[in-house]
Length: 366
Ligand SMILES: *Cc1c(COP(=O)(O)O)cnc(C)c1O
Image 1 (cartoon, rainbow, N blue to C red):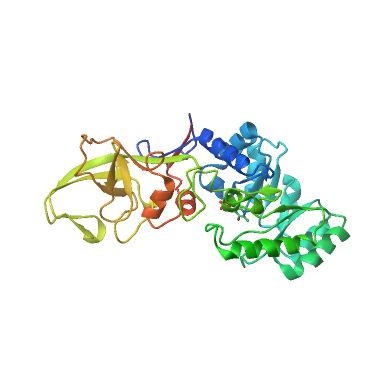
Image 2 (image 1 turned 120 degrees about the vertical axis):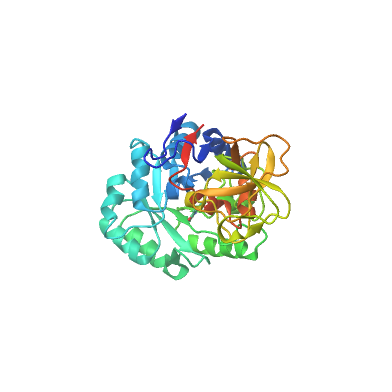
């Protein structure tokens, strides 16, 4: 078991995130089976969604032979290249090149995702190698407008540079029945005609698990690898990867009319038992004005009462049948409480719950 929390900040008896790398690999294999005709890459941006770039990418690379990775920033790509000991997987960077980052792209042997004609011209001038082209088909966030596709294609071929992949990104794939999916797919196919010979990539996790018609040549899953459903409902094909747990540090009995926490927002209506746990919004656990969320203590559900504070959460353990003692762990998500459900209960999604996990949490790899 290796521990990579910052020893300066990880408390000895504080929150722990256990990260099951076998489950990560099982999710990768599940997506490969669901998309048998596509290559399966891995989106490892944002420190592999908070799980830890090096252990996650190394596990996927060595155990599953995943050899295509997507990062958001060039610096993340440089860290990934170093983590994989400069071995040969392809690293694509969503940000695309700027004057400032061109040299880094070259040094790290990273493939840029070109998001505009300006970026295409910059890359072509450098003549530095193949690129991915991202066409915006309706997300209106990042990517080149459809109207620039032809000029980008000509710029690249004029410089003798290959467009290895043409990609786009779905805005509403969380709902497979959403009409925007089909609409974007059609626009994507239209734009792709400008790039003969390029491979096609439209699907992130949701598209990859939706149906074959969205998978094309390469899928780019992120959240499904890390144990979160990309849909607006849970997806049981996805295995739990992260268990977030922390010890109980105090127990107290409340009389009726006593209150709990900041703002005294919760008042006991009857005698209650409260367990205080070392976890808070400072660790990325969501704070809401009204109590939301729960943990599992000794295999029973313990609802959060009172406001989540920076370092502590208070749980109602009044109805627990088994004795609860200081040092027992409360599990906030993991095999006993699905990440999707924990996120929904706190008005979040698996994405922000995972990426929000703070630096104080001791990440342990199984
Ligand atoms: C983050 C991202 C992905 C991965 O998305 P998931 O929903 O986590 O699978 C794929 N493609 C692009 C363009 C992204 O920004």
